[in-house]
Length: 142
Image 1 (tube, one colour):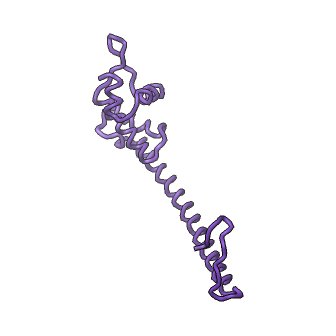
Image 2 (cartoon, rainbow, N blue to C red):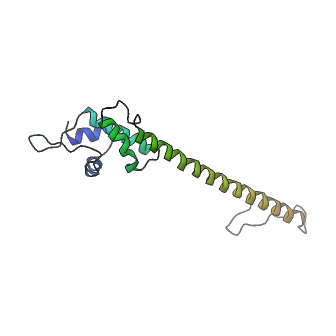
Image 3 (tube, rainbow, N blue to C red):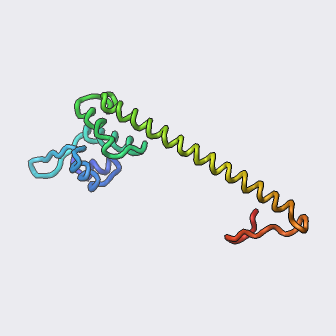
């Protein structure tokens, strides 16, 4: 198949395919007419790249998976180098999850402080049940 058909079947653009080719992720085969030619195996390579990118992998991180498929394995994650990338990515994700949990705890603490301060302000108001304070950003606080 030609580049336009492969791009359509893979759900991408010809520009992206040319970029993958320049990065060595997609083979650069040419027919006798000079046009790029591709086959079902190339479509499988693209599906592997896209799946990994959907998971948040950088393009270069897909290389071991592509190379594993090129080596004739039925799946791109059957090779040791691919497994190493998975392990590294899980470590990165665990670190990010830890950071997000810490930020969430800080935001929760700040919310609790703000709610307590608001309650104390309302309790100390000269006119109980009086008008609510106006937020400096506009509008009422509730």
